[in-house]
Length: 435
Image (cartoon, rainbow, N blue to C red):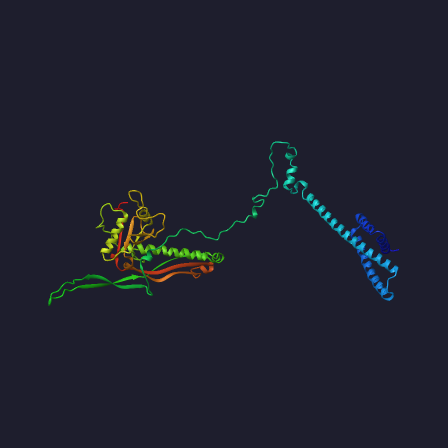
């Protein structure tokens, strides 16, 4: 008899008598034999039994149609096949579980062998609990205190987890402080399309109007004008930037533009106030202003008093003042002025108010020297003519820029400053005034 037929007979007999015997046989075989091979044989037998069950079911169906019932022999045969089928299915499940257990055992053995090959049990990474329990100090500890050093601690050092740290980068670029510019806002502004501003300026006014008797000769008056000019001047500067840098840092172009524009405004503020008119310089406000005389100022006057009398001098010249320009330090001293009882004279530290004194706006700026002031009717005293608003251009066509892959960023503006009524401006110092 073949091995296949012997296995079939043995399984069928055991299933008919006691299904548990088949499972026990399978477990016994799996414990000392080739589990995978046995699994193949049991599955093969299960497939054959399934085929026999299908055939027997078809024969039983035909028999029931012909005879109207099944014979006792057919019933016994079908029951035996179904029992064998159920037993084999259970055997397959048991064998699959056995194979999974063996795979898990093999993996555990491989891991242990791998740890030993890696340098022995002493080099295997231990948990904190295992390290503590195996420490000699713990084994001999009865009472008292002891110290324990963790050997496998993860730290922020470069040899541990330090390389995993990623710093946070804030995209804001922190720039240097910038001044605020307001002197331009005090003046009249216009535009021009030429490089020279010309205007007629009244040089002489002799008004001799008087009461005249009938038939008498009327008095003659005289007016004389002269041609005045204000040339357009250019304020400019530039910076060199590598093209790769400009391409790789998107926000750099905006930062450079802002800094270059700020530089133009800084130079313009200085020129408007103090330009000496020599060469390409503008002829500024202070250069053309009238000196403060102090004719009506009483002795012992304060800074606040002196500013009021400078406004008076402008008004007496026929130009009621509309503003003041002071150094920021002088303005701070005025704001903190107190009376004999220590009370602030006009400032309230608890409230935010614009810089205003004697009803006129005050422009605090560092572009005027400390201890100096400029007051007057700015709107009628001078006019700014803008020939070209601030312009920022980028070009590679500058010297050897093209071959060096460099860019030149240039910022410039063009303007003229016409001082039309110098008598409307009063310039002086606080030195002789009291605190």
